[in-house]
Length: 472
Image 1 (tube, rainbow, N blue to C red):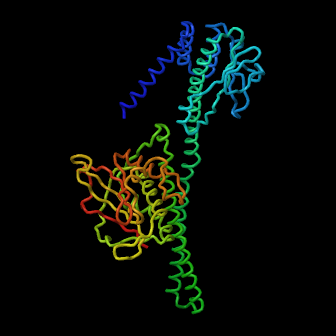
Image 2 (image 1 turned 45 degrees about the vertical axis):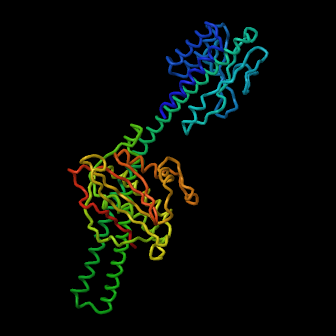
Image 3 (image 1 turned 30 degrees about the horizontal axis):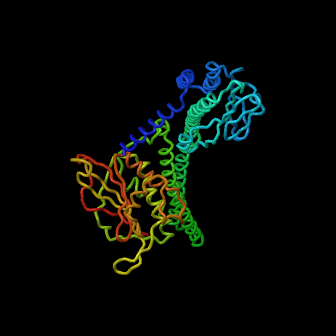
């Protein structure tokens, strides 16, 4: 792989060497090229690059120039700089005969060459919409330009396009970074901080429910310890007591649901919009020891239980008797919760009904964990976490591609998705030092990730696979 790349670059160098021999540039033209390249690297601003572009032909060949760039609309040319006036204030000035064309052409007084950017660079950036032509470069007077100079000036203009495009990309990137940093600050101020008020609201709601429960208790005591109250009044009080109980129970269920939603939303917001991610340009882990089942898996699963139920997705619960041991690992809890969020979301979409070995039609999901002794190294075990779904087994070669960015299985065409979820899972697990994969099995597919755990830390104490079933 590396040797083929090396040979490819070496071949291009030889091609360039041969090309420059054929160009047969004069010494002064070679010096003009060298000066342009040096100064294009030395100056960092676009304004200085404009000046270098227009003044090099003037200083070396006594040819005046004007540099025009296309506006955002891709149609209007604006004069940015000239060898006569320098940086132009009147963008509409210049030669009205200069228009956008694909090939070089002559006007009555000048020679005009299209400025093209480096498409290979532009295509690397998803937000960069590179136009075929960035602008036009005008050289005058035309009568002073020989055929040999025309060829040189065309090559010179190509170098203008490449350097100009790179500078534009740098400035655009800096603008994007500045915007992202401001956006993160706004999110922290306007989204994450106000979100904390919901915690206060939920605490107040919990207290109000307790107060209602205390009122209900007073009604019960009134009925129980006031025998002088007539039967009709007692009956009314009993009705009030039960009505209060129903309302309290309903309110408390709603409160619990709101708290679960708040906790997951807050966790995801804090995790994905963490300032350090944007500062370093990658996910920055905040590890803490946590219990996978109670703090990551079950809270995430709770969000999907109604959807599983709606799609009649059940599970095999024959392994329910496996001891429910505590497993604590140092991980970024928010990011690992989103790993399971992706797994369960895919399970809702892609779990299929199958016919088992007893000819029963079943459709289920299960999740589990297993210890892999010395998986990563001597004294460093692996803890394998799995999510199994029934359905058509994935082809082995396709399984290797499922975690690639943007890849979607042909079987997923009917479901909404971007092909990003499993790539996210892979990235998060790998920065935890782990690995991911999928194992096609007889009745479905076993998606898994493996995290490292030193043997001197709290470990899974049973080598058997523990599969917690999802039961309705």
